[in-house]
Length: 486
Image: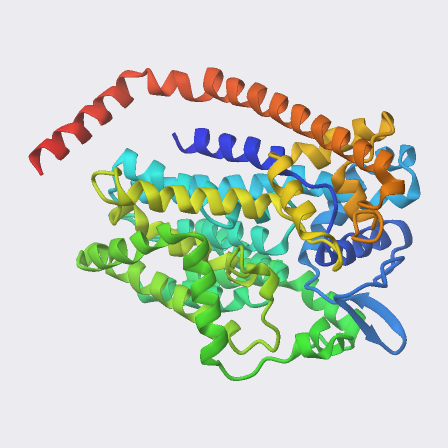
């Protein structure tokens, strides 16, 4: 069941993939190409936001972990880029990194949440619902459709938590602890604030008093993962302990102060407002905390879930445009926040529970379709884009086809600044408006066609075999019996 959920999530994320990289990804991708092509740590072309400047030299303003992964992808697929125009190199690399790294990382996180819920004693039904709501009812879907460092950190941290869970009747092995430490180190390299979650996981690990050699294995694994990051800091910024945030050009983004009540409330409201299903996690946490054999895990989860929004409430900038999603800064703690849901789901999902699930999924789908647009763009046209481009296959496949047919889609019109009050609706641009609407219709037809085909393949080869199996029939009968007993 777990791997089926992962494959389904990967397929849907691929449908939503938007090949336009954001600023955070652009500077990491530029650093990756510079590492491979010029053996240099300086950015080659990118001069936008999220950069760091030291002694007149321009570096990436984000943690280098994602750039190292992108450099590996770029090096392996380098022959492909000889066939790509130079101005499309970064978007193509972005798509490759998303398909080969970003989406698989998101799918692995979904799989791990399912497996951990089952390992903790949740029913197959509740574990599948929990992993499914993480996949399609939270911002996990939206940020897995691109190459985001937070998604990679979340997968690493969840993997480390899985490895650190004590197995009844045995002690932690050195190799297992070493791998967990390696994943924690990678997570910090992807996203510096992940050190908070790593600290909680290390405390959880030490609580069970493992042998000294096991602790040494954990530390060695983390050190191996962090060594390239520290070497990069030393070469770029003069010290292993100085990060890019010390040299960011947007100094406000580098200022971290004391926690503030207003931003803390904003983070919680957007988090719960976009995904009200997480309320069941609070109920499940309370039920699980009462079990002595799960109390340590619940304390660790509570520490992670509370620490991250408190920490980021001291950030100088609150990104109000992310109100449709909770801030991506909270993404690494999201799977930990969702996991207790497996023990707090209502028995009957009719009525208001169904409304909560519908709200969570609908908000996630609409927010995933939305993209940043220039100020001055006509708001109704933006709404038309969100509703008309039902799947991300619009930007990925259909826009290319529409371009070959000389039909400017609304996505292209927005990105090139055509769809403004002063141009598109003017009488002299009526022909252009007709072409844009035709292009949008083509996007819709292509998107729905690919969606139907993908849905059929998922049903035929992934879900129909398991739903018709004896194991699923037995689980469904046990669930019906439990409902009748209640």
